[in-house]
Image (cartoon, rainbow, N blue to C red; front, side, top):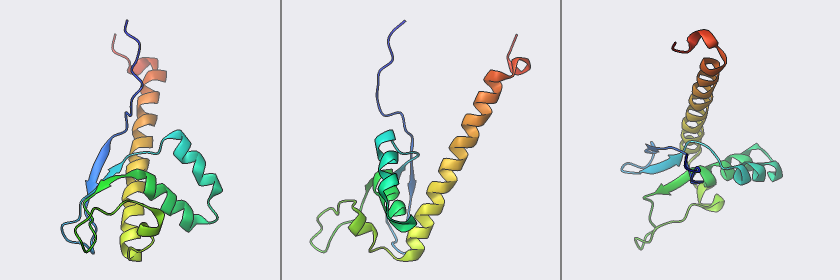
Length: 118
């Protein structure tokens, strides 16, 4: 049997912000371990949210006035309207909860011998 390849196995999904027509944001479905560890240094829930978004946004199509791509940073994220931030956080929360529920269902199938095919 081949050894497993260590690679990024996270899934992505796309959202568009309500305040920015034509916006395209690709989000990861979960944080990596080192990214999750950084959250313990957040001073408050707001900063924890910015850190989380910074790492969960894989890419986006935002540009500045000169048509240069805008990097995903906590400073840039803090400039979004609060409604868009709430939208992003709720979408991420939905995805994380759905992923956790799927993992629970899979682990139940593995631990319940009656659910296995014979």
